[in-house]
Image 1: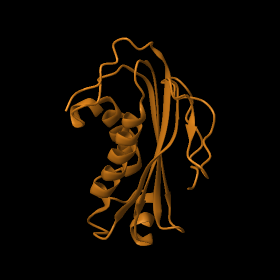
Image 2: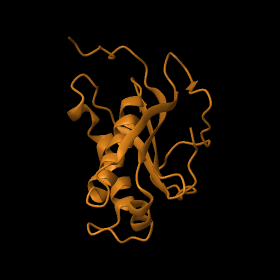
Image 3: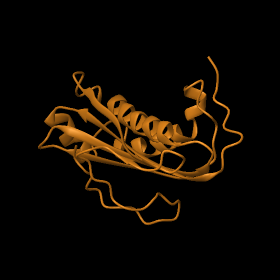
Length: 169
C-alpha cells in the first residue's frame, strides 16, 4: 500500500459533483420539511456536515491526499412525494489531484447527518445511492455520468445559494 506521489504534477483547476439519496418515509419527510425534528434543522446541519466532511476527507480515507479546497457547496432537498432526500455536493480546488473523494465524502456525510436527525421517526431509512456525477480537471479531463445533468459553475464561498431543485438520476 502507498500514497501516490503527485509532487511532479501541475496544479490545475479541479471540480467534482457527487450525489446521494436517502430513502425515507413520507411521514418523516413531512416532519423534516416542516422543521419539526427534535434535534433541529436537519437540512442546515446536513449542509454544514457535508462541507466539514469535504475538508476532513484525508483524515477519513487513509491514502487520500490533503488538499486546499477553494470552495465547497452542499444542497439538500427533501421530496415528500418521492420519499427521498436528495443531496448534491460540489467541490473545487486548484490542486495536483482531483476532488472526487471530497465531493463523495461530503454527500455521504450530509446523508448520514439527515439519517441521524430523523432516525427516531424512521428506522427503515436507506442510503440508496452515493455516486460521482461529474469531475473535471487534471490529465483525464472531464467526465459526466450518463443520464445526469449538472448546473454550470463551481462552488464559491461568496456565491449566492443556488436553487433548491436538484437533478434526479
